[in-house]
Image (cartoon, rainbow, N blue to C red; front, side, top):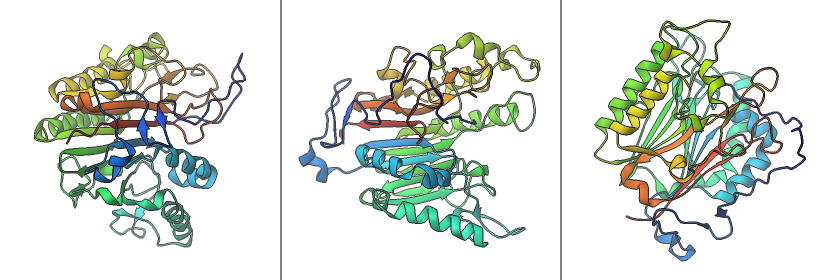
Length: 362
């Protein structure tokens, strides 16, 4: 879903948000608050850590643009949080392969001078601190569209990395929408979920229905191991997850009204999408980590998408980025926060980032 984050003046306030995450101490590397009986990690125990515990998901809205325009700020932010895993969506870099030839979604395009230069700029940024400590996997589209990336600290090498919901390593989902990493005690699923669209068409409503069905099948078939599912899920589950429920429920494009009342409304907030997402959580025995810890609506930091600042979408916001985890991990969730403020608040040009910390209970 297209996002807007060019700063504009916010009426009635000159306050600028700080990039320092309130519940997290970068110097100590531990959570300042503990939820549901979780245990924070003492710095002296860090060397004994067996698997990743700190996860960051980021819809970059073009990783190359972030490198060119905002990289010092991004690097500072990542250095402070020091995540073990970084899941990125909307990489927007094309897959390798010349025109008319089969593409390789696992590698960046470099068959033209322009592509080679873009690859050089991006890889140089990812090889310097703090990103040089991570191994990188790509799942890319044929063009500068969608695409995902997964960065894992080299000391936490996954047992297996695949790129489709059927968990076959050689096959990539269309548009590079999935990276699945398997660790000893859990699987990490990074997804950029297709937008529902506004009309009953093959590339919108039907595509999203098929996707939701496949996700449900995946979580049911993968119940042998805990799941951490993160990314831009392109859905706002409950009314608390949008700033203006009535507006989003009745929204339409060019006056079009879908045949089914359950498909009416803003993509991501139609009743049909919300019901399907609820079924995935319930049947898959999964929980929304952010909502578990944040019961009340937060108009400043509780959303991860801002509408076009011009026109009727000004000030309208949604939460469409998530950490969804197995219920068995509930008591290990120490923190789950959203950082970045989009179009209405100045400051965070790294856009919206969700960050979760789990306690070590292996």
